[in-house]
Length: 440
Image 1 (cartoon, rainbow, N blue to C red):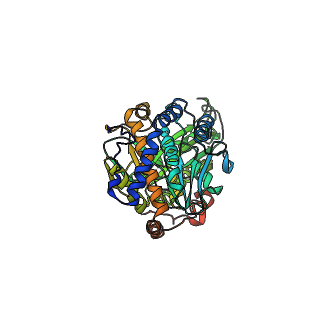
Image 2 (image 1 turned 90 degrees about the vertical axis):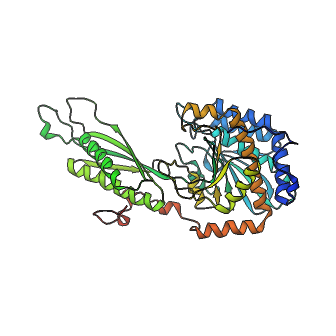
Image 3 (image 1 turned 135 degrees about the vertical axis):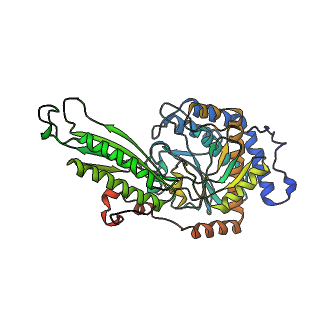
């Protein structure tokens, strides 16, 4: 999606609209546009030096230096994560967090466009400085490590990073002509299963062995068979991670890794228990021992988008000339997952998408990464920063909006105890569904 690059005096937020929101958006737009060259440099610096989750040391220093150059104090390593970052402005409540991501993918670099997320979040944070001079409230920029491979937001949440936050905003790049204000995602969790059998000579004494690889393969086939009995929005992926070292030895150790995805938290719990039973059944069939390690990194819950907050963002982005739709709270088949979901059931949150290409390009590819530093990617940084900042300004200014956001959050289920909800199936036998056919 191509967009003109408006100058600070030629932007699509017209102060003639006459209300406080429009005037604030006009000021924010001018402030962000003044930073356009610097934000483009920040986006490219992050993009050119990709770092995987929990190792984003250069990236977090780059963000800190950028903010400090704009006069903001920063703290790196807050809440026990060495690659988190915190900057804050304003005073008192309400308190809003703007989230930045900057981790990359192994072998692909920024094939998920987190450089766009980071630069837009930083631009939104700085763009609010003038507004906060006349508004009550606090805005925090929180850099959240390891979205791709470690559930950094859940780690931060358990350390208390969001305990006093009233609302959370962030965005994510996407491709194609349309964007959505209400983004829906799938819940996801992983299990690492290790089967331990008995080694024996595969030719002279196979009867003395217990084949761990057979158990791993039986479980793999069981997972494959289970797929026909799950919802269309659910997903099961598996790989054999270990399978023996010598052809003439009965494997005494083998492994499988399974990823479980579902459109709902309840569906994720049920499907996880069904997967656990498949693994246990394979171990029983082959007379081997099973060890399971659920959640090597925290599970991700579906994003619960707050429609009241997303509606404000949508209005600002349409005023900016973006092709953005409301979107749906229901995930589609084959949807992806994000740890922002874990925060969205603790605090009202939005996670809209913003296009970096008029053509659809698969995520997690080098081509997607190239689009993240294209002209459309650069425009997404600026438009996204303005949209997020204008939405935050509305939230701080408008007590009626804050009440609508709160009421919708409570009506959707309110705050959820994530840690209790996602007890691993191998530690929670009393909570398993009854044996026999499970409903889908």
